[in-house]
Image 1: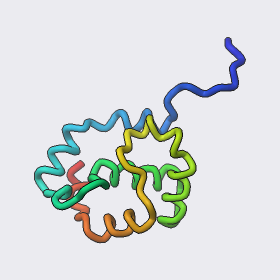
Image 2: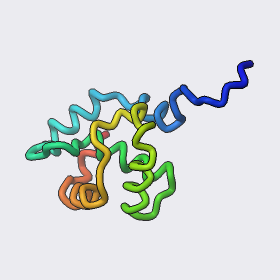
Image 3: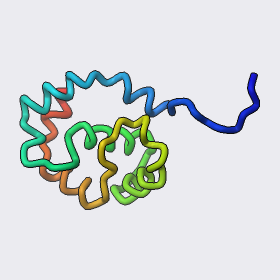
Length: 104
């Protein structure tokens, strides 16, 4: 076994995210029109952010945003298009209906 200290493999969270079928997310977005008038922070990014919140046991949006920005170089496996700021997460939680996440 190689004694390398470098970690090049996908994280456990990245592996869990890869199990989510993107066609299910696409159907929910079309059905509930959750990406209407949205420029950057799409429903898929919102879902991944909230899952990250649950897995990391974050208790506030500040913690979620800070942790994700702290891992910004390692989020390639998270399939995130946009790492959100705290205000973006707050706005998305207020405006985006939870019906889409119930569908997923």
